[in-house]
Image 1 (cartoon, helix red, strand yellow):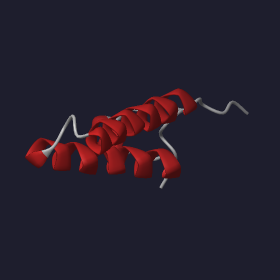
Image 2 (cartoon, one colour):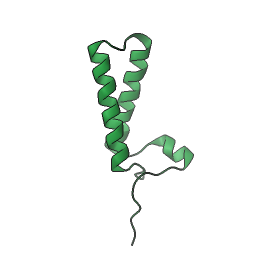
Image 3 (cartoon, one colour):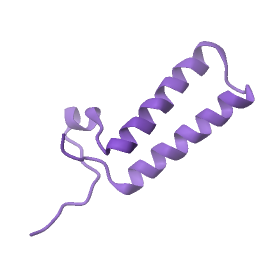
Length: 69
């Protein structure tokens, strides 16, 4: 797996995951929506930690900086 996520993208995903987690923990979101958003938050954290997003590969996106030699 080649990295395809930049630092800004990773930070935004981690913040979104934290917000979703906080909203779920406070009981503001619950039920089916809460479960779906919690799974999405977990995916955000996982993809941020490994710096790879499979959807970016499908769409040919890359948010990391290109190393020039």
